[in-house]
Image 1: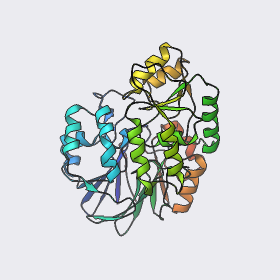
Image 2: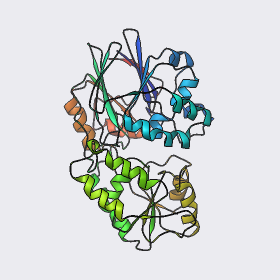
Image 3: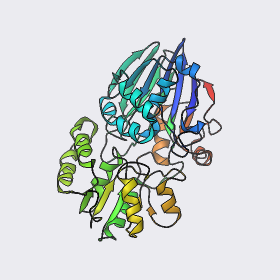
Image 4: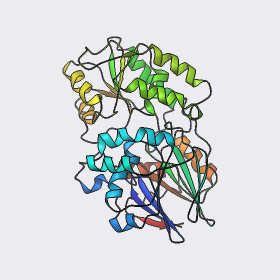
Length: 383
């Protein structure tokens, strides 16, 4: 089994890799890199048209832009294989395509024939048996284990082992694993981060703005924020749809979040910013209502708290660097302790890490000796 690192290794964004065995080529994820412009070669995965044309199938693990947005681009570059996504990913992916894909690529992705990837189950692709499980990161998010009969490779995608909202299924044993290294060696527990985020909101009774991805972290925030809460346009419908997908949620959490959603106010463009915690998407200020709300908040010196990744040069990054907004991570990826546990229980002898820069990867490798911090996008290896 040979693995090609196409994006997201030694960098954040454009997460993608390919696995070859017995003449079959499977691609996992096709994301983009929001830290560069769309016309930059590093915006898309590092894969040639010939390699895309030779790819037999593509699995998309979830609907965030750094995992799904390059689908239409891949089709334009020659990919014509099978496409597999979870039903919820199919439902939610167009938001990423609308915000971050070229218009023609968005239409290619929307028109593509997609097969349903099971939330928890197996699917046969050529010589591979692909096992899936819930990732704990987002409704519709999955991890994948690829078995060619001789080797087993686990791809975490984005996972959250201890999410209070989303369920994560345990990964089976494997020979090699690609872990979600988004936070490097950060080991601050999620419950402490949640307390800090809630305290920020409590300190600003005049209201504040919390940019967030529409899917995933938005429900995590809804679970912890002090009321009152307000929602940007289009957010209520998406949150309700996520809550309806009960198989992805911890038992009992749906009813509590549904009550909080019902109590939240709807903010509309043109209205004054509310005296509430206003949730708006996206989480970076690059698209969606946040692209309008953040300049308004900045002009009015209204408090803003970012809680996730901010690409260099994004509106969110600029505001934080200028002291016009605060930042405090609300974990929607594994902490150090969680990644150590994932690796230990996997039994893997080869460990890769995606979604962080080289310095963060080296810091993580100090705690996970098997982690190959020397491998980056463009590398290939045999397992």
